Image 1 (cartoon, rainbow, N blue to C red):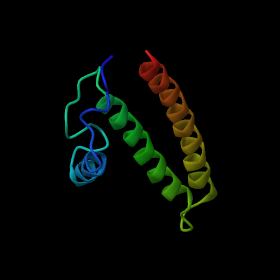
Image 2 (tube, rainbow, N blue to C red; image 1 turned 180 degrees about the horizontal axis):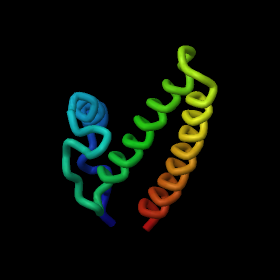
Image 3 (cartoon, rainbow, N blue to C red; image 1 turned 90 degrees about the horizontal axis):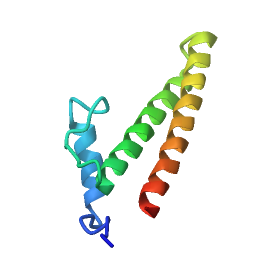
Image 4 (cartoon, helix red, strand yellow; image 1 turned 45 degrees about the vertical axis):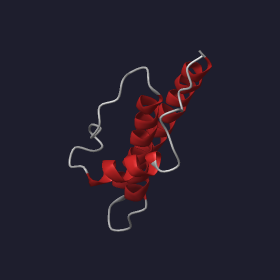
Length: 97
């Protein structure tokens, strides 16, 4: 059995996080290309959803906008949360297989 975590050490995920946030293409795309069968593609996808979620949650907390803008952000936050949960189900299936 292949150890999917063999190329991850204590700092690589943090370094990837920092690289993403310093990239002009993030979160539309990753600054690094990952192979589809690697654990890194799942880390990338999870991180992308988390960043989208944090951004929408920040928008939902604004106080200088109308109720409609807040409502839209809350709806988008809930959609992203659902997509994140679906991703995690797929990730678990990938790890089990």
